[in-house]
Length: 174
Image 1 (cartoon, rainbow, N blue to C red):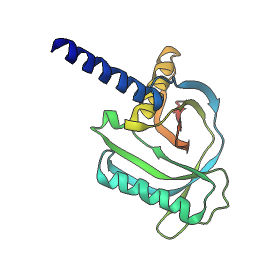
Image 2 (image 1 turned 180 degrees about the vertical axis):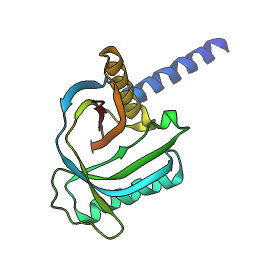
Image 3 (image 1 turned 60 degrees about the horizontal axis):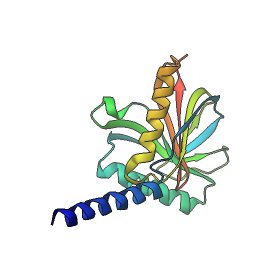
Image 4 (image 1 turned 90 degrees about the vertical axis):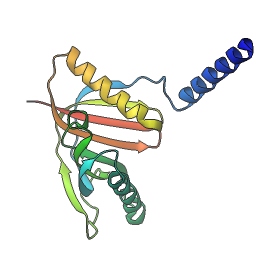
């Protein structure tokens, strides 16, 4: 009986390791110090709990906006505070990040400019299943900043160039 339980346990561990590997769980996030380029974002403001239904609903609305307007850009957002320091509550602007200012803004949405800045940029190519990858990118950026004595602002730009890539930029304090 114990032998059978041991093999079942080993099988489960192997199974979960394979899943973790397939979603990119073992991929490392890279971090570079760079100057970002000017971009634009069309979307909506959000203030509330990052794990709430309203946040998820807004992301779905932004995804539909991207499809319906045929925007050439990436789903993403600007976050004006660190939710880990605010009991999961965020102040954000979620939308479609565009490389130019040519897109028309539909009623109910607004356009904002993301100015060029001195940033730490983290990137990982892995599925964001369970939020593993985005958390990994933030941790890599904060670790890099600590090791390099860099002070970061509470201004985060996050986008998803494709379903298996996450990029985060955090502005360096002047």
